[in-house]
Image (cartoon, rainbow, N blue to C red):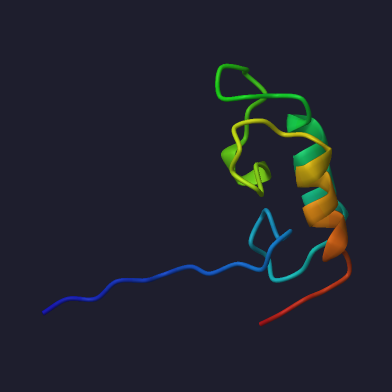
Length: 70
């Protein structure tokens, strides 16, 4: 017996607060241009999981900007 918690987040909600807002854009912007070898790297900002934070990742956050969930 036991239990696990599985956290599910909406695409673009980088900080997992239930909404896609400027905080999420800020997280992605701070990591923009980075990869895992860079000190600015933030794996949650790599929305498409290709190893670099670029315009594709920013676009995925922007696509859901303003959406929220509970």
